[in-house]
Image (cartoon, rainbow, N blue to C red; front, side, top):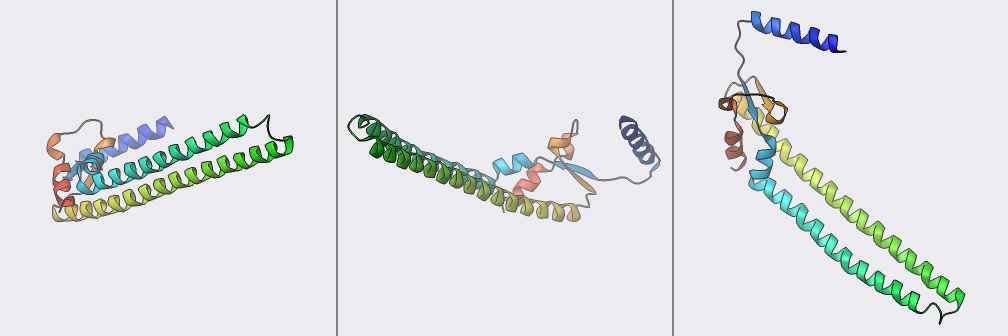
Length: 165
């Protein structure tokens, strides 16, 4: 496998060395755009707020379930065995329902986050395509995949200003 990669790299470099064409290559930092654009910040804040709300509601419900459990255990010696077992089973069902509901709510928030982020990135991709066409850029790379690059090739701020419009 390393041999094939080396062979590919060798041919790629050789074809580039003999080519008379100059390619216009730029890079963009997508994470920076997401974290610093108003739309990206809004998506992040929305997700954080929804999660906090779910967790706060969960803590309240957990406290009620814990109180209910303690009440059942306190009445263990007073209640008949069958009545006690019914209450324990009922409590276990309540706990299971609560856990399933919380899990579903968190999954819904995650799905919503993924959808909003995907929509945002699709819009940024379209902006990148338009920017590349307008500026005759042959290749735009993600900064995250680069090892070394010239900062003159960075178009992140240009793209961020377009996203903000």
